[in-house]
Image 1 (cartoon, one colour):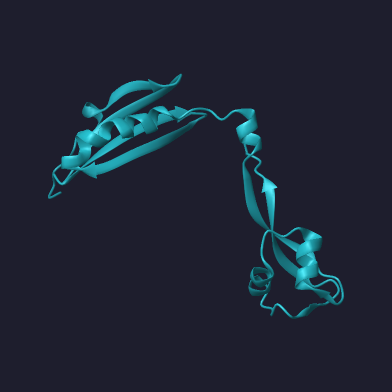
Image 2: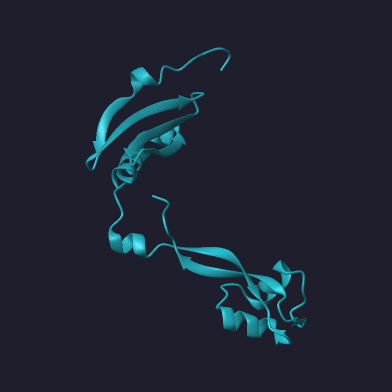
Length: 145
């Protein structure tokens, strides 16, 4: 503020979270609040975990911020396998098919109303053969790494 600089580096301490290298610091936010920041290195990425509280509440909240940051850990294979995402997919409609029929046939995660809105249709509209329609599919998340 007004040309003031905060020397974050000199106030940051190295630590570990689990077996992962980490760093932690606390910063004042214009004297009104305090910010607790933790950075954790893993897999070529830096994860940042932050906690913010008023200056008056910061000391009481600090153990909570530390507990949250220290809970960071690698996912188990079972946890990783349980991660899902909802993706928009295109499917071809069948002649005379209703939106309800399409939803059931494709297993869309969307309601009939959501499918209709996403495709500029009314719920009562009938679908033409080969008409491309957007639906939502819940799929297992696959990491790029």
